[in-house]
Structures are given as C-alpha cells and as structure tokens.
Amino acid sequence: QVQVVESGGGLVQAGGSLRLSCTASGFRFVDYAMGWFRQTPGKEREGVSAMRWSGGNTYYADSVKGRFTISRDNDKNTLYLQMNSLKAEDTAVYYCAAGPYYNPKQMRPEWYNYWGQGTQVTVSS
Image 1 (cartoon, helix red, strand yellow):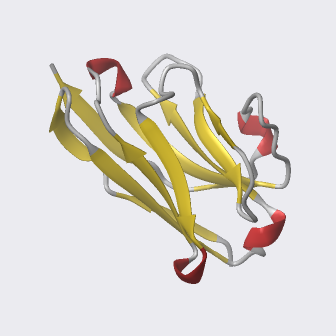
Image 2 (cartoon, one colour):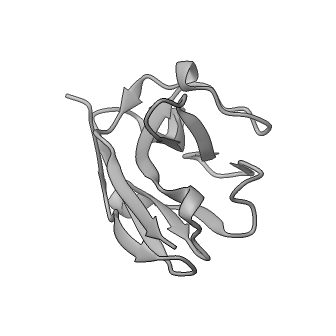
C-alpha cells in the first residue's frame, strides 16, 4: 500500500523558517521523482521543487530559488523541504508527491501519481 505523509507545517512570522518532511512507502523510491507542490484557495497547484530520488540535479520554482532547499534521506525514506526567509506569499497547503517522470525545467501535477494529504504553512506578515 502506497503512503505519502507530510509533516512540519505551521504558523511562522515573515523571515522565519520551516522544514517540511515527507515520508513515503509502498513503492520503489529509486524509480521515482519526488516533489513539493503548493496550493492556495482558487488557484492551481504550483510546483515548488523536485528531484529524482536517485539524486542528481534539482528543480526550483523561480519564486523560491535561493530560499528553499529540497533534500532526501535514503535511510529514512524521507524527503525534506527547508524553507528559509519565508514570505506571506508562501502561505499555502504544501503537498508531497511522487511520480515516474522528472523534468529539470518544470513540474506538472499530472506527472505525479502519489500524493500526500497536505500540510498547511501560514506566514504572517
């Protein structure tokens, strides 16, 4: 049974930091790309950052470059998103996802077939 579970969201002041975690099970990680998306009410789901589980280069949306860092711990089957210098516009529900296709230049939700339930990140200004 596939499970994708996010944690680490919360309320933080602008300029602060949060680290999101995503623990996955039930599929072969090395065959998948892992990514973080975010969504606010009335807007489409936006790709934030992605990487192949096997390593290599990473993708970041322009809006988070230099502030967010994606990483993984193979031993713990866990994906992370370190978010620094948070802004009010980073407020969203953040989702972890896994899919068979990785593109270093963009992310599309339809490329990902396993999703977590989401974790709320709220940045107060």
